[in-house]
Image (tube, rainbow, N blue to C red; front, side):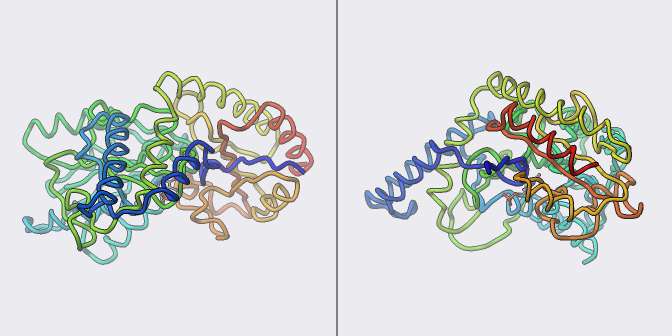
Length: 386
Ligand code: PMP
């Protein structure tokens, strides 16, 4: 049976061209990029090239790109880094504004810092359409607010949040003298949206390798030059003294190649259109069933690759296993909470939790999915949902 992979928000299959450059490098080069001899400098040159490519993608300077072990670390560096620095020159506890739609690597971290009484936190709730109102963010600002962290595209329900609008509002506030650092987790946005950091008005932006047909275990944080933040880990002076440790050179090369292969914004929008047509077919199909509700926004405010729905009076694990046995890789929402019988904090924030036995299913499409596959998925869903 040919498998149909519909879990591209959890991770994407690596592009063979990415695998090839990584393989070539692994076999030919082994120098430590911090060594001054020829082998070291060869590795260093590859990192410099990769960094410059990513800087072009983000419209920033190469020195503003810091490689990490993935988006989880980048989000931790962003948030813990800003808080640790802010604490140094504040009498009050720093206040952080974030949303109920964040990935666990932001949501659980902010909750933890709040529980440890290191910070005050405000979690902005989405509307029932799964969107965040920029005014709610701005209204939550207090005298001790040091950081606003808002996910660009929800990995669970596909909401595309108004990052640019929030950025504009924050820069208006900055003009009046109050400097709040603005971070976005853009992991799920990179494939289809413009990550031009200047246009977005962000100070910090997180990306990951494996969500864009690149390797796992590599990510990056854009840090606008001059942003006041401390380090998360301590050691050597790699990554402009922001993130110590010998770089994952192969991962960096693979990640930069994967981003290059995404193409121009126009190319990405073309891919988005094709994928959204297939996804819409599935939305229309599942919408016909009683006891099914689509989670998240409709139209332009929804990422082209995401479909999330709740089936009332159904067993979540059973549905995912049935889909799996029938050849479809789907998930319950976020790979990071799979296996838990509890609805995720995102689904709970939509007010769909608490109903007896409700199952959440997330289907996330990728560039490799075909119309033929979607036809097959509909047939299988028809049987399972009935
Ligand atoms: N943020 C978002 C929005 C994600 O979807 C993910 C991956 N599930 C992460 C952060 C964490 O990424 P990584 O696996 O690179 O740590």
